Image (cartoon, rainbow, N blue to C red):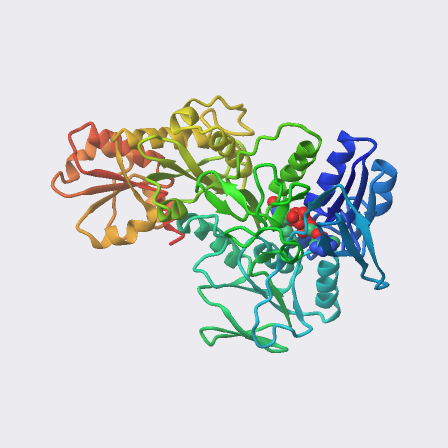
Length: 543
Ligand code: FAD
């Protein structure tokens, strides 16, 4: 009978324990968790702040008792593993409540200790009104402080997924929230041109968004930023990133990798074959960047945990590495991304191009139809899909999941063009947004038309260029680009001689679909320097 010890009782640890039990009814499984809870929904923690999750007990998916009764797993909470003794294959466990210490032996050991929130060494970062969010205890403490102090001004530091979710949920709870991000944008999986929608959404919902500025100092009622700006804050939430929990592994002589996280092989074994490691504490192979990286997400942690159990019991494991897929709700918008964004792809020297389209997410006649901003990044000239981002009020995640699947299968824009997806007016359009993006990309790569990004429009206005706005007269009257000439698509053929042939011509509409038709009409009428503005007026309004 195998005895397996698991360190960490949440995403990776609990998944490994459950899978091991499904594979071996006889195995002795002991899972140590230093906190008071096992198997809680980390990802749902921020939603307790707004009341979307009404009761913090609902965050707990399993208890030590339910592990025992349902799976015959010995889950011990308040039990910190303080040493791994590889020579005698034992761990030293400390009961954090009583202080008692004891040794427990193992045949196989699984590490899933996660990653802890980074707390910068800055004046005031140890003050009692400064919080981080990692577990149920943290979120209960934060919520209690917000309510008991009736805190009106809260500063959230860090515009990653956790920071944005915490800021949003506190705002939904009626608090004044400032979100401070050191980088020029929040949510770095998104490119600059896409993320502007989310910046605007935060601001429109009353969040004071401060990007390009960092935290310098915390006092009991304010924070001071690097720029010298002072922001009122009775409560400060630090969400500037996480650090893999590696000290236990390192002290036991387990190798760390180039990213500083625990190094594992393709079967998630450390340099000690009896010790596996998964989750936020390890580094993983990024199959698009061809290098080791860290990816603190729940899905990969659970998949790795399952792979560990399978390998432990002699099953073949295929480790394809990660591509990085994520999604988030930002007030009324859903946003999702997969693979590499354009910025990263270019930084690592991949020859990529991108299309940015804005297309209806459902048939326009349907009451819930909304524009979906969609960006597709692909390699030139192979057409291999490298990444995608989707932002809209409807289903952004389903589009991104389609692309994630294609990336995993090494799909190309040709594959995406031909991909047969389900359709009904309430769910999508006959040619879904993702198919349309592939059509545009294949046309672009074949040189059938030229495009310029909406983010480059400001430069165009200053350039000697003729800008044609092919929207209807009433749309044009409501706001237009400086210097643009309104020739609605329906009048284009009759008025084509108004458009000069000796200067570059740029065409735009609301979402770049009518303008694409206009560009093709001009190209096919002898114009040689016509460019479509991708992203178009819906995008322009964000700049
Ligand atoms: P964890 O789930 O953090 O579990 C590690 C556990 O190990 C901890 O409970 C810790 O107390 C315990 N431990 C550490 N050291 C020891 C020790 N020595 N002895 C005993 N116990 C120990 N991911 C997504 O994909 N989507 C999301 O929407 C999302 N939202 C998130 C929101 C929040 C607020 C947070 C905090 C995370 C979110 N994540 C999300 C990330 C996701 O939760 C993690 O990637 C995932 O939980 C990692 O699993 P893990 O097992 O490695 O670590």
